Length: 286
Image (cartoon, rainbow, N blue to C red; front, top):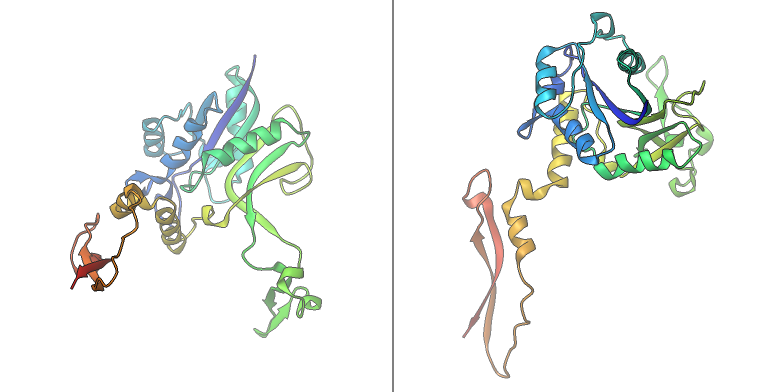
């Protein structure tokens, strides 16, 4: 019997640049937990599978609701194994267990900015089209036509020098892989790459996209996450949102008022004191 959709999250244990990256603490939870929780919250999947060679990752994945029906073999867990091989292995394992699916979604374990609505959009857009894939994408931060490389002497050489004087607004928009999710129809095959006309790009806003390969990337991802969920880090945001709109202050004729800016202590998650003073308007009658 063919089931609808399954999510597969590759998460090997041997990350080099950031040690144990997939389960490193990210604001109180292992990084992989974010992808698992969004996948489950979407209610799109019969199962959420984590493919890993690491028992500790498998244990954490199960804690957050994923299934780990196998430990990935070592020959599929080195630095040179591609994601496609890992996903194919998981699919074959499931087929051998009598499970067949119409759609498979590969989710990266390093996507704490992943949003449920875009995951659902990818599924719905793919389901209602004749495309074979749908994947997360975003705009390039700078026109690619204006980029350059370095020659053998360390000097600049533009890729498209004919656009040196072209205004940015006159250049064609370019897009890139956002590295979050990749939907595929299992009953259709394509000999084209993912970034071809068999695929539907689901365009994410840039503030929801950050590769996490280095510690610098990690720091940027933390900043984006804080901006995305300010209430988790600044209780004053909650208080400001709850403030009721007050009636305008009424002034009487010939009334003399002294208006100044004052400061009020704010209590934050990380402490209190001079660094947390907030400006307030002070109005006094003279």
